[in-house]
Amino acid sequence: MKRKNFKKEIREKLLKMRRRQSKEERKKKSLVIWKKLKALPEFIEAKTVMFYLSTPDEVDTERMVKESIKIGRRIVVPVSEVKEKKMTLSILKDYGRELGIGAFNIPEPEKKYIRKISSKDIDLVIIPGVGFDEKCGRLGFGKGFYDHFLRNLPVGVPRIALAYDFQVIAVLPLEEHDVKVSKIITERRIIITKE
Image 1 (cartoon, helix red, strand yellow):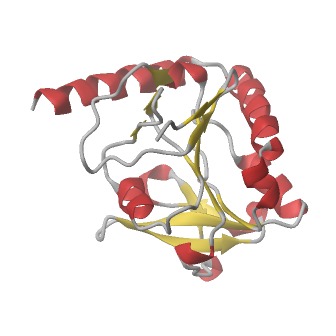
Image 2: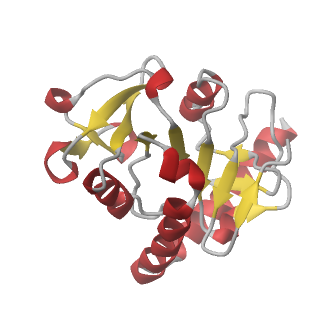
């Protein structure tokens, strides 16, 4: 029980910090993070990239997705299946035309634009999170959607998280079901998993 409370405290503190940033700060940091991401070999070599679609206080992926489509990447985004607590993956072709507001107020493709794809066809996954630690542990919103998805992702597919630097703390109280990421990109550094 203590671990759950500690996780909740960390989650609330980091979300507060995220919300406190100005729109300009978020935009500036997100651009720095995008420049680092697109220079990585994992991104350069990937043909199919799964992005999360950002909410207003997360590292902004709108520009990343639009530019990735423009340079010929096949972009995949998650669609939340709330009752099943899982995500369906869908190919996104037009950011401006195909999206609506889905579960948890997160942008996702409208029903008529859902083009299902298997996780086996993804070369790189870009992941959100509330908090991370220096060993690439990840703290999400506690609903388990990404943990479930990542556990079933084929071995060897890079899992790169995007975060503001303050979201990375020394150690998170992780549990068995929590899945680590391969790398974390912040506006200040790139953290690589040691495992």
